[in-house]
Length: 159
Figure 1 (cartoon, rainbow, N blue to C red):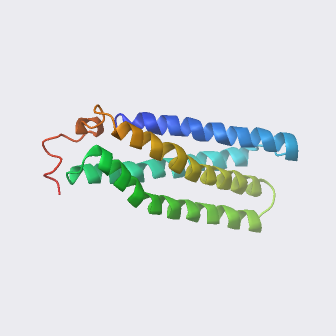
Figure 2 (cartoon, rainbow, N blue to C red; figure 1 turned 180 degrees about the vertical axis):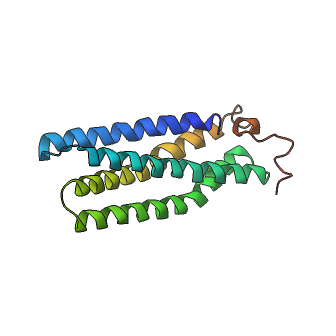
């Protein structure tokens, strides 16, 4: 995604910071321990987070290819991608809740961290990724469709 990859990296850093803050807070106040199973849950959730970026950025590219401006495409792309992101994250969250309810020990730790990261993905997608891309889309530099790997001359032809 070229330049949008920077948004992805920044979003992962924001998400990681939020998750780390919650882990530190819960360890000090509730005695939470991050086990190997919890780390596995966090790693699995990175895939869920990356899927959210892929859904949004592909929708954004579709909007640009249909001939819309980058500014309009960013808003419309997120609006249509948000439903998919929420549904995908809710399915992951439901799986984490079922695992939490039906399991004990380290599997519960996996489920907790998977659920925590999934909730964090929803927050970061709405409160970081959306505004970051909307702000970038307002710049004349981002309005060049080559930024996403789409030639300006072919943007309207792929309808």
